[in-house]
Image (tube, rainbow over all chains, first blue to last red; front, side, top):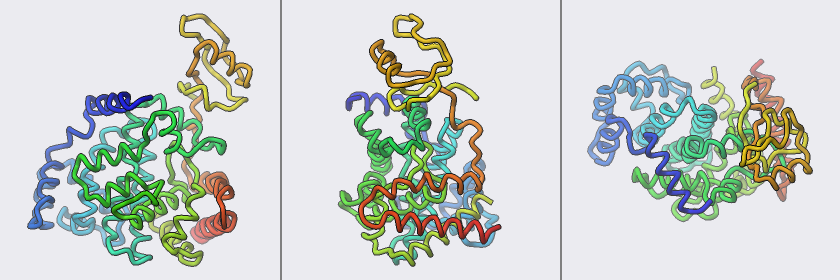
Length: 277
Length: 105
């Protein structure tokens, strides 16, 4: 497959109501979040205009992803999630909801949510200064796989069938080899399209090759570790179930020793188990 | 189980093809069910066959905690291939995850 085919894939995806046709409420929230003067209450008021979207935000806030008491109002939900992760959620929710019936999308969503939680926990444990950014990166890191699942379904379904074959190459390498680009590249395109900060674009683009990150190597490395812990726990990718050998190198980069890793993993298991419950 | 169309190339020997295999000009090459081996794959390649139907392996796979624990060994198996402390890392992850499930029950 050549780069022309890559453009064709995006065109196919957009034609099927891809990223360009976000619900009005999402556009309004994204516009509001561009301003520094937007408050939590302003965002809550916008969300309330779309009851379906508001219900999804409430559901997410109460899903176990956050260690707070049950939230019953949109204002509480927005406060619980925070404005940073809320932007990522606004981008992810409509896309995952629209394609929830496509094979593999449910697993990608479960993996993305689990990775977001893992990234948040790792960030707080290692003292990373922007845990909200890490959480958002975890939530969006595999958004490019949605495009693959929808627009290259034959390819993606083939990958799912060999997900646990130890002789195959990693998903992102195989995509690059067979398609000419991978889900990281597509995800970064998505992140740029919605003007996400460079550090998040890097987190999505380089989450399998954190050494190549320019704008936030630690955050990108942290995203990869979150991704790998989610896979270890059993909430991995539908098209590649393995924890990659590079996991060890990433842990060393973030100076996460055995004791710290054990604590992080236990906390990730507890929190993710709350979601599953 | 429902059949699913997949690429021929990555399929391992022993995979059962569940639908008749037709070449691009519509000629029947192999009746289903057929078990793939390298000879058959070569034959299919030479006739321009790129995709075949197999049973969807995802069907019936339960996402229960038990099945997740059972596949833990598989999920962590590539760690052994890395340089450095891959085996130790695998052991640590396995012990911690199993400990969590033990405490939970």
